[in-house]
Image (tube, rainbow, N blue to C red; front, side, top):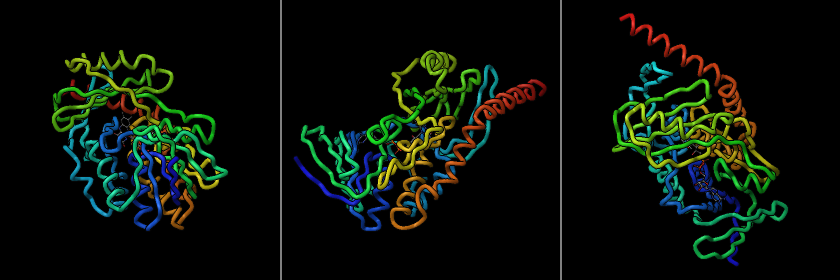
Length: 335
Ligand SMILES: Cc1cc2nc3c(=O)[nH]c(=O)nc-3n(C[C@H](O)[C@H](O)[C@H](O)COP(=O)(O)OP(=O)(O)OC[C@H]3O[C@@H](n4cnc5c(N)ncnc54)[C@H](O)[C@@H]3O)c2cc1C
């Protein structure tokens, strides 16, 4: 059995994990990041919409605004449609090709001599002995990693969270597929009665289409997305399913020396996605805390308040969108 010893073991080499790894390496710490998939080939499903807070955090963490060079387009027109009506809002939110963003963060970690063990699955954690047992999926060999601090960054279905707490986090399933680019605008097709929406987001050559619905209404997702495709005159693409944390089941630490960041902590806004910002900011605040600054749970408090506020205003936001759509329709009818 191969053995490793490290100060920080980070499980999950996505946005949150590689960002934390990068920040810890900047301070000269020993870090091992393990990743279940082939880290260079994996491509996460994601709308790629970058909230302005995420841009700021990215600049603080990476000391550059290179994020802006990753964006394929700056969509100025967002259309929100509700029932039969729709309206357009103007916004500056950039969109990135998600794989470009993940590749960038991973490269910065690797360039800082971070150790990455990919195609490696953690199968057991012994928190008393500070040891994780992993399986190398390429060689089928078992490895043991002894750590001082364990960080779970393994996404919305976090296996680490299940191993440490005995239960998985709450998440909502989304569906997403690739369609031809039929227009350089973003559309959200809101269905308030199902507490969810479909989206169309253009890319470089193609576009993403998808839908997200809250728990109770997740059953009919496929059919609603099919209807949405029909409405846009598009064939239904091959669809993939992906989890987003529900945003109301947050866990920052399970016990001493174990921490959760990004989706593994449950840090996402299931209504609007918004997880890129939370993945970056939780990695940044945990790194600061581990390196001696404000304790992580304390530093995260304003962000948890923000998420709570989002969760409690979701219904009102749907309502506001519907009212605005209806008003826009009557405005345009009058003109
Ligand atoms: C369809 C969809 C659209 C979205 N659109 C947006 C958007 O437009 N804007 C936005 O801000 N957010 C969006 N999000 C949310 C955003 O993608 C996530 O919040 C963000 O990726 C979280 O980053 P993370 O590093 O915590 O998790 P992830 O990016 O999921 O990374 C977790 C990593 O852990 C690895 N892993 C999993 N299990 C193990 C294991 N047992 N051992 C080792 N490694 C493991 C995974 O392979 C993965 O690489 C969207 C999400 C989805 C699903």
